[in-house]
Every structure is written in structure tokens, then in C-alpha cells.
Image (cartoon, rainbow, N blue to C red; front, side, top):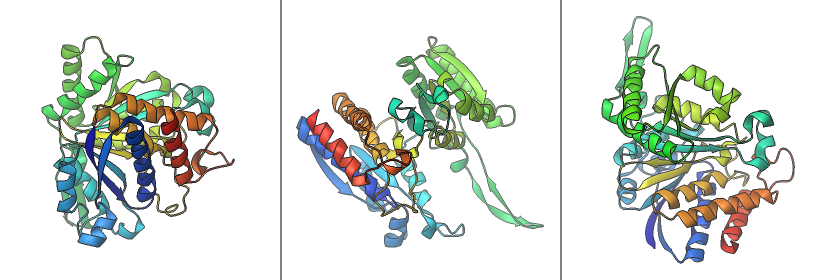
Length: 358
């Protein structure tokens, strides 16, 4: 297979982990006889420095012409001025809109060999396997916002907006995934307070009832979900929610396996290329030190192979390589629990070698 893959290393540890993801992709190409064409483009803070824009037009064009996109991370203290004309995160929001990537898919899986790396008790974490669906192009991040005069100085506002079609499409995607898993779907909202959440509840209940009668459906308020995700995470299978709640809950869920460095994500639309990335940020405090965990990015490569290139065997080979390396006792600093650790590039090379060997 021939495919064009755009690399967006971004800021902080982004270039370090994307390099290891590319290493895994190259190992897959050699092993299975594929050919990848890579194009590296700017996004985030580095793009602002170079062009004045967090998402240059040339990056958008390259992404639209690709089969898939592998992203590192954006942002850092250098670009944190709240009154700046543009911020690195604007590049992420814009590319999601430009590519119509409305669904962010985040698996949260507790690896048996890493259970003790979690801050939670073993009996709570062991066996956790959750799939989050976060709506990505609507809600408060994309509604009207601004500042205006106030008697005390200023007031700021952000508007949360959703329509029926946006809710239907993400609910359908989540329900289909639930059908292929344990047939349980949990929808998270704040319907006791927010009118937007009441629409979410009405629409999602109708979609599941009418189109997915074999799926067990439940709703939870977001504050209750925040508690249950930590106290009884094994009760959940597939979770669907809106943009802001999904942003917060999936980062909370990252603590179940013990490190954000273990969790990949995919941003998908109805057609066109998907965007794949680790859920962690740019981690500027460890950038350049060679200690970042690249496994989330490598697992994002597996999602890229599965969802954008329809290469299930290759995706499983990458995931199996990660399992083998972890079972052999290799750890980066974040999951080493104070023990012996390997560097970012060493971990990537271990996985690369295992893909080749498998």
C-alpha cells in the first residue's frame, strides 16, 4: 500500500515522540511491504514563531491531501500570554474544523503489567477497558466568545451551542462501537442545569432507542461521572459526551493506567484523513531531556493504521509489540515507579525491533 502521512511534531516533547511514531511506521512498512510518503509541517507555537499563524495554510492543504496525520503536541509557556493575538491551541481547533473531525476517540486501557503504576488501588484499576467518544467540533470551544465592558472592568463570555445533527452523528458512532464491544453506552451531560445537555439527552436517547436496541443505554451527570470514573471505572464500556466534558474526563481517565504517556487518541470525521495523537500535552518541563514516554504516540500509530488505512493486521502488530516490550520490563521514567528506565528513543527502538521481529 502507498499512503501519504503528514507529520505535525509541534512543540515541547512533540518532535521527540513523533520521531518514535515515525520509527514504528517505518518498521511496519518494511515488515508488510508498504510505502509511506511523509511530509512534515508546522502547527502550534513553532508555527506562530515561523509564520504568525498557529495553522499555516500550507499545513492545512497538506493535511487535506494526505491519508492520515500524526500529531505531537502544541503549546508551552512561551506562548501563554492570554492577550496574545493567537495561541498554539488555535491551530488544533482550526484543523479539527477544516477537516471536519467531529469525533475524538480515546481508549483508556489498564495494562496488567502497569497496574501498580496507577495512583489508584489495584482492585479498582485492573481490567479497566473504556472507550471515550468526545464530540470535537461543537460546544463551548466553538461558540460565540468575547469580552465587553462591565461596571467592575470587564466581563468575558463563551457560548455553548449544539444542534441535533451534531449530537446524532457522535451518538451513532459511539453506539456502533458499543455494539462491537460489551454493548453498553453511557452518555454524560449536565441536564439538571444546562439546556444544551437536555437536548443531548433527548437526541441521544432517541438515537439509541430507535437504531441500536441491543445497546444498554444510561445517562450520568458529569459531576457523578467524575466520581464514578475513579471509584468504579470497570462499570463503563463506551462513554459519549460533549466537547468540554470530554476534554476533562478523558484527562482524568488517563490516571487509571498511571500515565498520560500511555494513551493515544484519534480524531475522525465522516470522510477524509483522520488525525492521531497522544493525549498528553507538550510537557515543556521535560522537553529535550529524552525521557518522554513515546508509547501513546506509537499506539496512536496503531489507530492510524486501523482507522485511516484499514490495516488491521498491522495495527495489531504495533499493539502486540508494545505489549511485548512492556511485559519484558522496559519502562520510561513516568511508568518506572522509581526503578530502571529507558530513554524516549530507546523505547521507540525496542518497539521498532519487536515489530520487525514479530
